[in-house]
Image 1 (cartoon, rainbow over the protein chains, first blue to last red):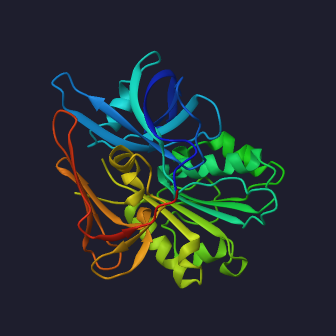
Image 2: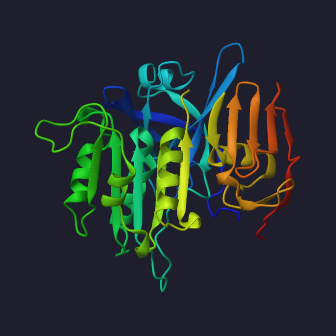
Length: 249
Length: 85
């Protein structure tokens, strides 16, 4: 399964970096040699210290399609080796070494003409929303009429990534229903107390297994494992549940 | 040690194989079960990256980066890997 967009090493120039949440930044890159990328794919960033030590980490891409403008949204992991540099030190004009586009599994592409596209359920934990936002935006920009829905587990209202963009997608045509689960603090007047997602809530706020949706789950490893287990228990075909886990450094 | 999944192998695989095999089907040599490479359980540290079977936990593949651009790559537990020409 060779990609029509082969991975290669590129030099990117930062064109903008601004706060996305209190702990994350949105980083916009110009990558002249970029071949474009499918929605949901990622790239590896490689930093090299003056003594030659290198550290490489994977980051999901928030943008999709053709073009050489690449958007990342990076959450700082305080003990991390790479993300604190990206969040605090990177400035417009800086250059980054990156490898991509990467990922042949956790990607969404508009259906080919004549195919009957499945409905899609997106389930995000924290910054795991980044590749799922790319999928929702790519879907909205396509002619695919299949139903899309997003369930987003997040600590507090301020921690929501792509808030304005998700609000616009939720009000678009066709609308993207977005269900939030706040785990530490909910907005004033929110009907539920802050709590982690439960199996019952998952059942209530996602497309039913009977509609045979394609389900994409992205978040920290424990979140993804719990949610994927509930989905299988609820009757989803394991082959229809696509997962991407990330860790803590 | 970080517990991740096979999606994170995409860059390594593109480097050593020349293509991104995360969507390809792989069969475990130990238990015989198979699935997308992306579904493997992956442990990553500064020393290297180990991919294990999601069903039986056997080691499927190992990547260790050396100096001077060298990588040591082994697939001791993959009986077959899907290739598409």
